[in-house]
Image (cartoon, rainbow, N blue to C red; front, top):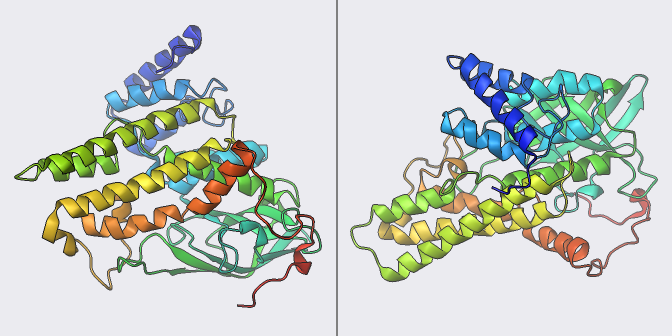
Length: 401
């Protein structure tokens, strides 16, 4: 860990963690997570009262290491959209009431979240979305469809981006809302994947859904700023999933290697290269987390997300090739399987994992979009050809679905 952390702040953080572990040694998981939030140790860079202490993000690694040593570190995958994406966006754009209402239940996972961005005709180009929100007194009435909405079938709330003004440029006519997923007019349907499992992904239909203006996140017409912050946080969260050395997909590769009777030196060389790549990515994620500004990461999230997506696919392919003929068998699931654990996350079924990780170069922004972001924002390359950015949304030609 880098040593440019303020010694007094580090000492205070360590003292708070030790006190937390002592006072809540016998607490259940959710009680402990609530106490961690109240102590300001959930996200150290968040303001006091929001689960943080307003300190340097680098100090979060100190907290994570101490909690992990005590067996108290809980992975963000319990509530990935809430913890990794929506929480920092609420901190950056939410009102005091929204922060007080939502942040603690997000981090205790008492309330699960999803994000309602992509649409059938607005996937990679989210800003072209057509879901409409029309003002009606103190409410907004929303109609439209979202797709590829992870965990929508379990979510209590969703971060929704809708078009509130079709007469201005596509990036300027959007507004963000916090949507209660249980209100009338919200219908969630599961999508079955190539694995035969319908688990994470859903399509969501919004039919005259009423959202109070108090649930608007950020100013009217500033939804693209909110969406961008959320997407950047999503990419940092995806790329930063590996927190401990040897954790995650590479652990499955090591386990599969250890189970082999004979160790081919060529395969061993491939495994070592994958392990090195995983370790470089893990350290890069720690650095990105420590350098980011509060609430809104920079384009480094796109690099992490791009690298992690490719690495996961390479590791999954390695494992399937390693197990030989067994790589033609699906171990734990089959066609018609109900909602259940996602093999992409638990890494227990190598074949389903291989099939499932193909989505990693699409989810959270395609690899092509990540390369565009890095090319334009990091390397300074010219934009892709397309309509003038100032063209009103309702004047842009689009396909009819």
